[in-house]
Image (cartoon, rainbow, N blue to C red):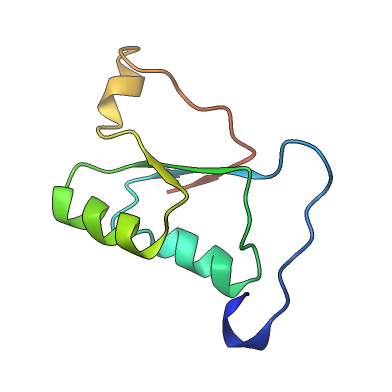
Length: 88
């Protein structure tokens, strides 16, 4: 269920809405989406360096895929997830 009594937002059929979060921290962007009713996403991909922040994010939201250092993508050492929305 969505927080604060809001109903979950229905997303279009298909692969679902995917979000890419740069410098994710403790996943406040993910929490904001939950507060808006976006409970079930097609994916939430996060780039964050700090282990304590990633641990908090992971303990609050089990649907986050952590990718580590965003510079790995900028240097073409990593694979950038294909997402509908970017947060930064």
